[in-house]
Amino acid sequence: MAGDYDLVVVANRLPVDRVEEPDGTTAWRRSPGGLVTALEPVMQREDGAWVGWAGAAGDPPEPFDAEGVRCVPIGLSAEEVEDYYEGFSNGTLWPLYHDVIVAPGYHRSWWEAYVRVNERFAAAAAEQAAEGATVWVQDYQLQLVPRMLRRRRPDLSIGFFNHIPFPPFEIFAQLPWRKAIIDGLLGADLVGFQRAADASNFTRACRRASNLPARSGRIRLDAEDGREVRAASFPISIDYGALDDLAQREDIKARAAEIRRDLGNPEHVLLGVDRLDYTKGILHRLKAFEELLDDGKVEVGEAALIQVATPSRERVEQYIQLRQDVEVTVGRINGTHGTIGNTAVHYLHHSYGKEEMAALFLAADVMLVTALRDGMNLVAKEYVASRHDERGVLVLSEFTGAADELGQALMVNPHDIDGLKDTIVRALRMSPREAGRRMRALRRRVGDHDVQRWAASFLQALAEHHRTPASASVAQAADADGAAS
Image 1 (cartoon, one colour):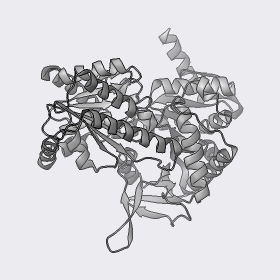
Image 2 (cartoon, one colour):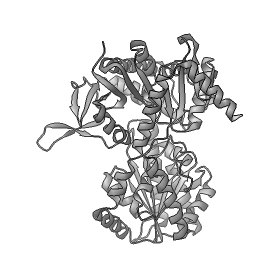
Image 3 (cartoon, helix red, strand yellow):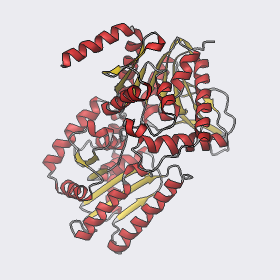
Image 4 (tube, one colour):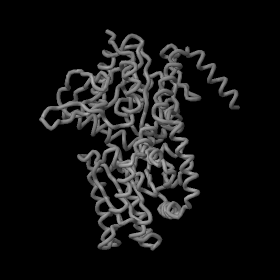
C-alpha cells in the first residue's frame, strides 16, 4: 500500500538527535551533518519523510515530526548494532572501500544482519512513499535497499548516493557477497558517487562481477526488459553561505585571535581536524611535523600544530589502537621538543561546535588534510568557506575527492613523508600574494558548488533519467561515444 510522501530519504541515521533537556525530559534536535543541511530545505518544501535509525539500541519511537520533516525511526537490537553497523558496515565495507588500509573482516553472521536490517529499512520506505514517489537512499550501510525497495514498489523513482569511495574491482572482488551488493545497488535508477573514478569502478564491477553490458556510466539490465541504471559523479559540498557568514561574526574573529594568544602567538598555526579514523592519515601528518622539528626546519614557538581528533567507533579494536598510537606519538613529540612556555602539538580528543570550528579555521595559517583515502573530505571545503579574509593555505591529499575540485590547494601524497614535509614548509613560507590568489580561486569553486546545488543536481538527474526510456538513453550514450571518438 502506498504512503503519503512524494520524497523519502533513507539513511542510516535520522536527521535529528535525541537530547536530554535540563528538566530531565527528552527532545529531538537537528543533527549538524552536511547531509541534513543539504536535504532539509528540500524535505520541508516537498513535505518529505526521512527513514533512519534513532541512534540507540532497542525498540524505535513512533514516527514523529521534527524540523518540518516526518521522521520514521528504525529499531536495531544491540546485537544488530554490533553485527550490522559495527560489524559489516564498519568492519567489512569501510576498510574494503578505503583500499584495505586495514584488513576487512568477512563474517557470515555480519552479512546476515546486514541483509536483515536492509530489509527493515526498505519495508519502512515502501510504506511511507506515495505512488510514483522519489526515494533517495544514502550510503554504504544500505546498499541492498534499492533492490529490496524495487521489488516491493516498482512504481518508485529510486536514487542511491555513496558518500565513501567505491574501490577498484581488484579490491571489491575480495567481498564474498559482491554480486549481491551489485544487484542491490542496481535496484536504483541512478547511483551517485563522489568522483568520476568511483562511478567508473562501479561500472567495471557490474561488467566483471555480474557480466552486465555497461559503458559510458550506463548499465543495461536485459533481464528487466532493458531497464537501464545510470552511474555518475555528484561531488557533495557544504553550506558555503552559512559558514562564510559565521566566520565573519565579530565574536568568531575575536575567538580566533584568542586561540592564537593562548598558543603564545606563534608565527604559524597549523591545523588538522579529523574523525579519529585510520583513513585520515593523522599519524603521517604527525610524523612529518616531528621530522621537521627534528631537522630544525620548524621550531617550537615559531609554529604550533593543533590536532582535533573527534572520537569515533570507540569500541572497535582498530580505533582503540589508533588512539593509543596517536597519543603516544603526540607525547613523544611534546616530550622531545616542547618547552615550559611552548607546546609543539596541541591534541584535542573531542568534538567542537560550529562556532569553535570556525574560529579554529580562522586562526590556522595552514590546514593539513592528509587522508589516505576519502570519499570527499568536507573539512577542506569548510576551511575554504571560513577564510573570508582570503588568507591561509590548504594542504590537501590527492587521495581525497576534494582534490578533484580544489586544484589551487597544495597537493600531497601523504605516504611520501619527505614530499609532505617539503609541502608543509612551502605552505609556511608562501607569500601573502600567492596565498590570496589561491584562496580566492578555492572560494569561488566552493561557493559556486555548494551543498544545495549538489542535492538539486542529483534529484534533477534522477528525475530526468526516470523519465527517459531505456532505448532513448542507449541511443544518447552511443551518440556521446561517437562524438568523443
